[in-house]
Length: 219
Image (cartoon, rainbow, N blue to C red; front, side, top):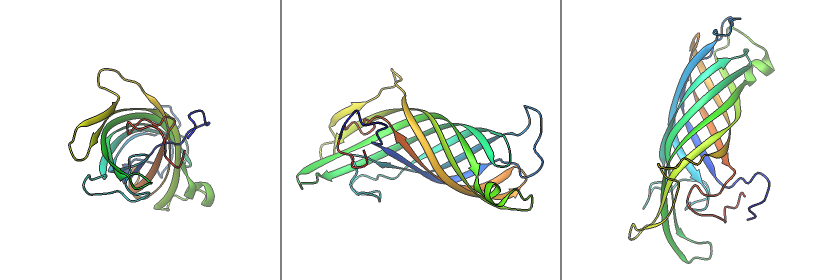
């Protein structure tokens, strides 16, 4: 791993959850204060990085790597294709590693609390490709954005539970760049009320969330 590699993709936060989102399928207002909405979501939050037992699937023993996060978003719909979102995320992450690649024991795990602010845009592929249809009730969309994330992480020994390393603290906020990108789909229940699923990968430019630097194969 080279620390100076442009745009290091060292850690990923996989956020898959249900979303209740307000996005109008009717006539858009023309004034600035028209077309605003609030959305909420929540679901599992899965870590990919150095302290992880399996490459893709989350471990559940001895440490449960499945943790959860939620978001609150303020949205401004610009058109039937584009919507701008200011998003706040709060959640937890965890990971374990029993052995290194050479088979030697590692026996480490980490837990982390994180909070994030980002600005992203959603692109409604259904309306972009198939053109807007007021009778359509199922939509597929993508998201891309940028923001800042901070975390408080403790890495411990699995056997003794002794703290090995930490990163971040509540006393000093030190935000890091995060690039969220994802795909989603939703059903329109009625005008401005939708229910769907969204899968988001959050890429960080610094390899410290698990209090371990180096080795992540996607960097």
